[in-house]
Structure formats: structure tokens, C-alpha cells
Length: 248
Image 1 (cartoon, helix red, strand yellow):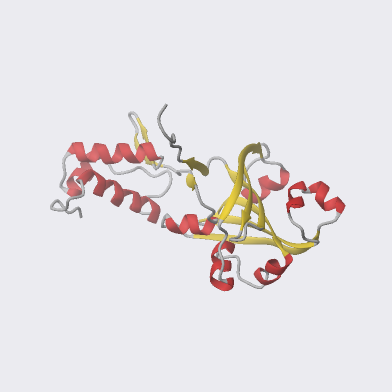
Image 2 (cartoon, rainbow, N blue to C red):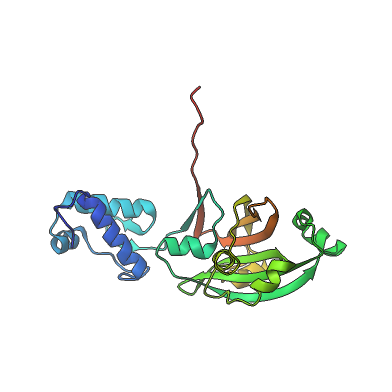
């Protein structure tokens, strides 16, 4: 129940409680959400408080109001805030969600002329051998992203021995190897799913996807990872904070 004596506004408390209920599956996707009157009676609060909370959840994408039919729970895009290099697992856990992954491939790759022509971004590395990891990132067993991640051999050979299905690589290297990726260059674009991506993400060929390429660096400003990813555009979005430096 809500704490009416707390300094936190009731509508904010209600929004938080209802959002958590949706995340935890109290109401499933597509189900009818409780009416305003039902929420008023359950929480013993005013209609104004209920309307503000529900409107906020509609704005965030958790709910869909349909005139004459009611309010329904819908899937909201997973939002990643760009600003520092974090992994999928870390982003989702920070939001109270439970990620997992299907590991498709872990293999060694030679940076031959043919390979560099196929993936020219690898030219930034002064390596002859690297490891590549291919995964499908999931939430509630639903595929969200296809990830192809390249690492220098010295790191990749050790990462290959770890369980990548329940933990993210960034979290693993911090815990197991004692270092973090400090900065990254990230390029976000748009594309459509080809046959391979459509199978991995369980969508039709031609379905819109977000693409992301990231080059991540360690504390010595040495490139450590190249990641080439594709996200379902209906389930993932990027958020960027912009601020003018000074006044004109």
C-alpha cells in the first residue's frame, strides 16, 4: 500500500508500484489493466492520483489506453541510455529485469586479408588472432538482440572458458580479470532483418532492426572489443542526454 505520510508524492508512489507489478508479471502483456475505479478502491486514493499515474505509464509505453475498450498492458521498448560503456546484462539488471543469453558460437578467427575485407572495422586492432563470440540476448526467454563481439586473443581465450549464458562479458572481465572498459565509440543505425537475423530474433525477413557498432577501450586507451549488434526495433531504443555547453 501507499504511504500517505511519506514526502514522496502519492502519484509517484503509485506509478512505481504499478510499473513494478507490470515488470514482475502481475498483469501479462495484452491483459486488461485495472480500471481507475478499481485502483482508487484498492489504494484508497483519489481519481486525480490514479489518472496521473496511469497517464505516466502510458507515456512510458507500459500501457495502452483504447477509448471504449479499456487500458491494456503492452510491451515497452527497452531503453538504453548512452553515456558510458555498459553491457546488455548490466543495463537490464539495473532496471530490475532478468536477462539471459543463448551462446551461438565461440571461436578463434585469423585477421587475414579476407577477414579484414569482410569486417574492415577490425583494422583498428594490431592483432593477428582474435576470438569472436556470437550470442542472442534475451529477456523472459524472448530474443531481443543478436550480438557479435570480437576480442583480442589474450582476453578471448580466457572469456571462452566462462559461462556467457547468465552473465555479461563486461561484468565477467571486471570480476575475473580486474579491469573495466573505460570508454567506447558507438555508431547507431537502422536496417532490416535478413534471413539470419530474422531467425535469431524470431521476426520476419525485412523487420526493422536497430544496428549498433561499438569499439571499446581500456584504461590505456587500447581497443579491446569490437561489437556488431542488431536489436529488434520494437523492443529496444536508445536515449541520449543532450545539453548545451554555455549560452549563446
